[in-house]
Image (tube, rainbow, N blue to C red; front, side, top):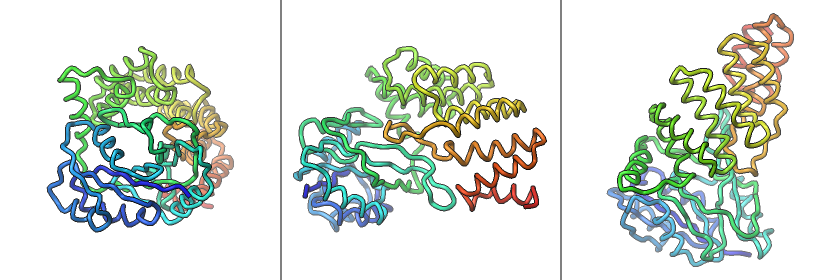
Length: 354
């Protein structure tokens, strides 16, 4: 059975580190924790789980820190987690199955990253990440921010997931500040960095700058397909925030140039027409969303509700506004089968008296 080193970088994570390591310690053969400048009890907590605790001087470069952590791993494979991640018991079991079943020629293991959840704790936003990699020179991180390793060799997608439980206190400007420091010192942003910089601008409501960066990213034509499609979606949101509806719709339609329609984009187009009270056209796009096939293995950011619950709920409203009450009730019931504790579903039941 292959051996695994869990390699982490941390800073001021005393709130969550023990939770993370407790959930993962029985899955791995070695734990490496690299501290980048904590001022709290992070290192003391790490030493309760492993003797392999190191210091790394922070240089505004996440890949450099992660590569240092990987350099300390001595097992067959290298795995990474963030301090506010946890491994749920059922995923730990799937991970053990992976180690028992994976063939010796496996190089990269992709695992789901669950980021957001509904009222029942079911993931509503997830995507695959390169989670475990053969301990070799190809396992090298790139990127100062939103760092990644390009999957290499034989790639296996495994159903085990990592659950992200963000800690209460985070600096929303951290990544934006890092990007701006890169730009100030004259660094050229890679296509991936352009994409993520534009997203940080959007998150911080700098919509005009975000839109310009997304346009530049798309126009240069060097981006990964899934990033291109997501860029179109968020660019549209920037345009709507700037009260530019026609360019917003154009951005959404531009996504179809890269691949077959995604449910996320169909829902966005549906909402565009919904807000303009064109319920007939909105319904068309929500129905189109229901026909889209979900492909998690593509690596795309997957908004699970867009593949069922959300378009069904919106079709309920569209049908009601079009005077089709029985059809509206049917759509609501279909949505309720997916999220039976949804407040919107329960409110609709009350509204329709069923």
